[in-house]
Image (cartoon, rainbow, N blue to C red; front, side):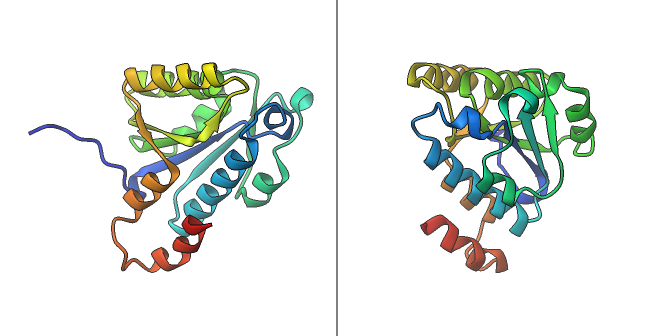
Length: 184
């Protein structure tokens, strides 16, 4: 029998990478990225999924986009490494969730998202990249980043694919709360 990785709400961690206003200002699809990530933050809250949220060198690149910042539960880890996995504070937080699969979103696809995904997979984590919730300034970089992660073993999912896989059923109490978010 083939081992097919499945994503489950009781065994997943969401990582939101560097959704900062200054970085998003350079990305054509920023509104869609912000909207999708806001939905995923709400889904994480409804399904009690832990999250880690990062920023890249906040002193120089500024704060998270306001709509994202409003939805964040807990602290934002500021880093100067491109891979989150190279940051000691991130690793300390990650250690609280051993063995969990990880869903990654954020910017930029070919830099921080890619390097984080590769490092997490190298350390044995099952990684899903939410393709419609990551972005880069240039489409070529975005596409190459997605391709490299997929060829390296990451699972490529859309926001809606991920949400329905985590829900598993339409008779879950959270489904009625989440459905309006999906239909937005």
